[in-house]
Amino acid sequence: MKRALMIQGYENGGVKMLDIGMMQKGFLCAWGAKIYNNHQATFAAIPTWLLKPIVPSLNLSTVNSKFEGLCPQERVKCLPEFYQRMLKEFLDSKEICGELNLGDMIWNNSMLQYHGHVLNFEGWSSVGLVYVNQILGIDHKILPYDELFRLVKIKAIFMFEYNALKHALQQCTIKDEVEQREYAVSGTLWGKAKCKDYVQNLLIKSKERPHALNYWERNFPNVSGKWTQLWNICYTTTTEPRLKSLQWKILHRVYPTNILLKKMGKSHSDLCAVCHETDTLEHFFVDCMQVKPMWQRIERSLFNNPAENRPGITNEDKIFGYKFNEINNYVLENVLIMIGKLCISKFKYGEYPNLCVLLERECAVRNIIL
Ligand SMILES: [Zn+2]
Image (cartoon, rainbow, N blue to C red):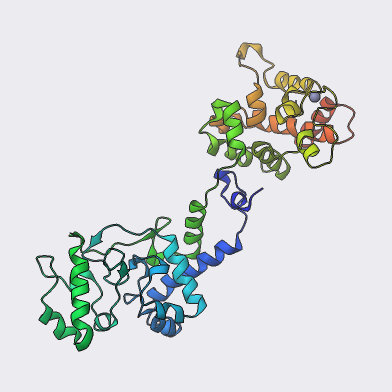
């Protein structure tokens, strides 16, 4: 099984396995928010000093550039590796925004480029010119040269910088929103986001569709689009790990029948030893002549009252669960089906003389009367 699948939540067929790499990335990203929220604190003094030239607002969520394009590159390269990774992981986790608002940061903003590069003029940001609305007049045009020169006062390159910025601003339409766009991480605003929010975000991005789903949907079209409910059955029907994991393995089609065992070199044939048919999962648990009497026993026990006129259990029910969209009303039915499959597994790979007797015993230890 792939790691990307195992780390997913239960509702996507995963087992919530911890992914250390993802936790580290989450921690790095969350550290950025921590510095921003506590930039007066002693612990934040050094990182603030390191980051200010690159992110003058200290608010990482206002940086609208990919890590590779960050300016000034020489400053980025001089950052300790930890902070380089922090910037990289954070900026990779968010999309580039394709519009420019009045409240956006001017620097390291992909919407404001000169010859294909984002801008970052330290002289300007060091006197507090950080946001777009600070350098625009009411007509949304850049303030006159003299007015900005009085603020920035860096003689030699000011004219170049002013014109580069003017040119960049002319290239885009500026939306009237003054309010700063807050980047949300898994529904939590960036400034409040914690490590777990970033991990959640990364999980959503790395969402992996289990391979088995294609097979099931081709052969059992009814289950299409109902996977959240189907995974749910593994967890809501029972608290017993053995039953849960068996159902999980069946749904992922990783339960070892002779097909899989032959591939692994553990069996000479991929046929069922009794019926000599291909030992698919469906054959193993449903169609095999060895298991049919047991299913009849379960069916008799569940639907012994003909007046109720309830339909029996179909092959689909035996694999996926009975009425899985109303699982809460059919817990007993589903537990019995799971116990049935556990008995088949124990019977075929163990040394039990009789499957129905085994079923009765397994039910008795769980206080279920057949
Ligand atoms: Zn068979």
